[in-house]
Image (cartoon, each protein chain N blue to C red):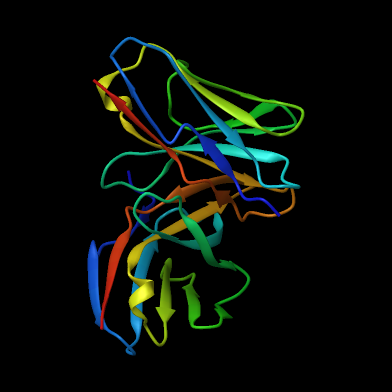
Length: 112
Length: 112
């Protein structure tokens, strides 16, 4: 059974640019969530996708958007990057019948 | 408004002794609680969970206690081992929303 994988591991962008982060769910998991973890903080929920549709969103602006594909992999897109977007971005997957989410290793995004 | 609070940023414990990590929550709609462990440069790893219909759950060296009236939960690790040194996050979900709300984490150091 493969775990959750994310790419890339690290990324450096400049303010105003756009970025796409990718996630492959754990085998058998049909729900994926994205979290942002700023330095010294706990992860904060961005949004969740189930059957290719967003079905939950945290307190993040519309420039944070996502996609889920038929194979349950997912993308997080962030437009018009700001310095405060620098963080660890975590993807988590689960089946539709459990609250327990399993996290990937994260993508470290630095915005200069 | 922080709905999940971990008031101790750090904790040091001697190897072989008990580690007790605490977590308080304010949202009475939370009905499922989880503990995650995080090493540097890795994603959070699921440790143990508890539903609000229980007050205790054990898994090997790890036990989680839930006191609903006090809105308090704790994670006990017995005996503590140097490999347990990590940041521990308390998380909660509820009311049909599988979104996880995290605390800021407690850094546990187990001293050999």
